[in-house]
Image (cartoon, rainbow, N blue to C red):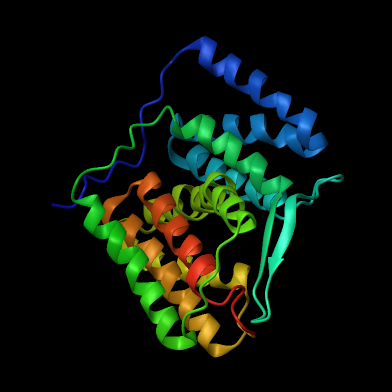
Length: 259
C-alpha cells in the first residue's frame, strides 16, 4: 500500500517553538558568519509553508527554493568551504575532500531543526525500497566504471559530512520543497514531477556536457531518489538512500566520476 498523500503536515502551535527555534538558529552566525542568518529565515519559511494555503503556499514554496539556492551556492558574502582534513588522493586519480559548504551546512541545520518536529518515521517495508534505491545505481556504476576500492580517515569523515550536511540539505531542497511543490501544482499529474526533478538534479550537479556515462549514472541515482519520494513520501528515507549511494560511490567507485 502506498502512503497517503498529505500535502500539509501538522506543526505544533506553540509560541515557545515559534520564537525559540529561530533565536537558537540565529546563533549560526557565530561559526558561519552572515550566511548563518539564513538558518532562522529558512526555518521560518518552512514553518510558514506548513501553515499556509492557496497562493500564499505557492509563494512560500518559491521563497524556500530561492533561500536554499542562495545559501547552497554560497552567494552570501563571507560564505566558504570549511576543510576538516587534508584530501584523500591515490594513483588511480581518486580525490575525496573532507570539507563542506557553509551554505549547505546552514540549510541542513535549519532543515534538521524543522524536520525533527514532523512525523516522518520509517516502516519495515521502507527497507526494501531503500535497498533498491541504493543497489541499482551502485551496480550500474560498477558495470560502467569497475571497482575502485579505498578507505581512509578522510573518507570516513567525508561520509559523516555527506550524511549530516550534503544529503539532508539536498534532499530537503529537491524532495521536501521542489518535488513536493511540483506535485501539489500538478495534482493528478504529479508523476511528471519525477522526470522534472531528476533533470534539475543532474543539471545542478554536473550539467549536460559531462561524459555520457556520468550523466547516465547520475540520472539513474537521481531518478531513484525521485521515485522513492513519489512512492513513499518520506524525507528520511530519501536522505538515507542519497547518503548510501554517495558513501558507496566514495568507497568502491572512482571518485569523482570521470568527465
